[in-house]
Amino acid sequence: MGSGEYVSVSSQADAETAVLSQERQELAEDNEGELRELTQIYVHRGLDHKLAAEVAAQLSKKDALAAHARDELGISKVMRARPLQAALASAASFSVGALIPLLAGTIAPVQWSVAAVYVISLAFLVVLGAVGARAGGAPMMRGALRVAFWGALAMAATAGIGMLFGVKL
Image 1: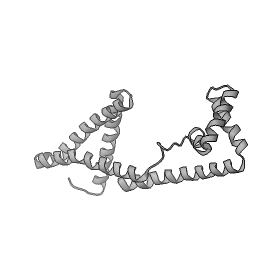
Image 2: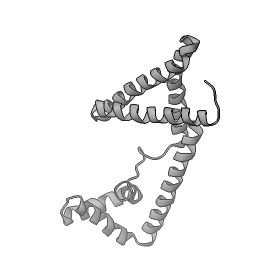
Image 3: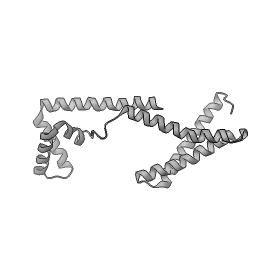
Image 4: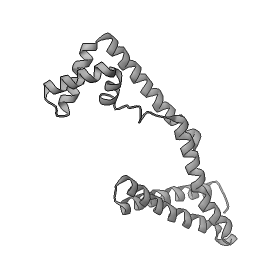
């Protein structure tokens, strides 16, 4: 999972680098046009034209590329794609998340181990969905049900594919 996350976030980082390079070139070739563009962004956000022009000029004087990256492209240093960080976080979270169902399958009697893994996995998906929703300020029940539904669907699909290929539990 970590390597997949690394590849995915690396692609995002490559795209960010490409658009920043293009923006850097546009600033070098048409600084005044880029200043007008930044002014229009602030006007569309609700500033009157005079104030928008002043804000655009001051931000451009300090760091024009950063102003365009943030306000035109939606890219900031804080939110830049970090492939290695994403890969490590993904690998750690999947590893930790796998421990509880693994323990359930190990502790349960052999005839109940598969059912224990499914039930415990689904229960923890409900809990994690609720916690994630709460952390994001969303309704906990909706988050819990969404994660439970899609988790159950993924487990059913995995079991179905296993059955197609003759995997015995």
